[in-house]
Length: 90
Image 1 (cartoon, helix red, strand yellow):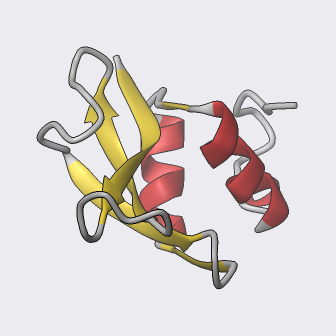
Image 2 (tube, rainbow, N blue to C red; image 1 turned 180 degrees about the vertical axis):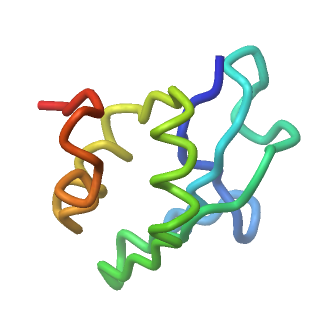
């Protein structure tokens, strides 16, 4: 099963981390090998970059976003672009 998950990047032991949004196998650890990079999130600057067509592709194939990624996608209104017959997330 594939999940859309945050992957931490930046310097070690740094309080202000930045994250990549990646499609990754459920059994992989947080810094494990990802299938594709689909976005970027910086919580300190509140910046988000999303590759929407790629995210929609993974969602249509059955990928499940984690809670934080779900909130980011909801704020960016990505779920409105899913086809109407596709399962909608809360």
